[in-house]
Amino acid sequence: DAGVIQSPRHEVTEMGQEVTLRCKPISGHDYLFWYRQTMMRGLELLIYFNNNVPIDDSGMPEDRFSAKMPNASFSTLKIQPSEPRDSAVYFCASRIFGRSGANVLTFGAGSRLTVL
Amino acid sequence: QKEVEQDPGPLSVPEGAIVSLNCTYSNSAFQYFMWYRQYSRKGPELLMYTYSSGNKEDGRFTAQVDKSSKYISLFIRDSQPSDSATYLCAMSETGAQKLVFGQGTRLTINP
Image 1 (cartoon, rainbow over the protein chains, first blue to last red):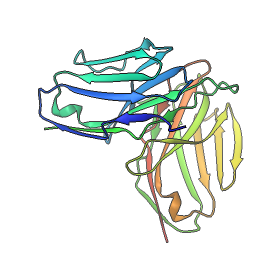
Image 2: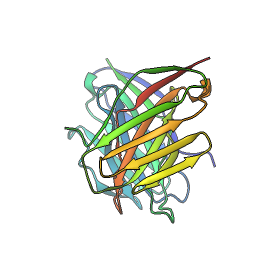
Image 3: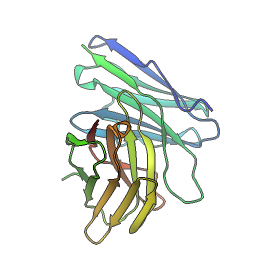
Image 4: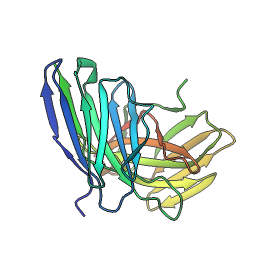
């Protein structure tokens, strides 16, 4: 299995531009999570999906952020318009509920976003 | 106050030393406690997890949970340069999908 695949790995854009980050979860995983990581705030959960349905988007910072999961193998996180404070590494993670009940996530390599 | 507190370090120790990494938390409903390791420019990967209180050992790594003190630890014995990474603690309530992460501690093992 190729693991969780994210693209682009790096994105540099100017303030006000639209940014779209993409994620392909592991096949068969029924949960997908979007996290944001910064030096100041660490890893923060933005939104998660179960069977392609958004369950909790309380971590989405503003209306400028939106996420979709049109099918089990693809999700997008969109920022429109982008601002310099959105600069961070955005991680996608997926999981399947294990027998142990533990919430074990598999993370992608991340998309490093820089907004100038 | 954050739900999970972790000293960001950095922490630098010589090869072969015993390393102790710690987190404190405020939510008494947390039941699953995890440690993730994150190498530079990579995503976090699960190192080990424990349920409720107690110890768990996996090779050179030992995880401890003290729920009475709301304190968890990760010990690394015979540390190696390849252990140099950021270590993040994470916790969740039973049945909850949300994992709450600590800030992460950056660890360097010097040869």
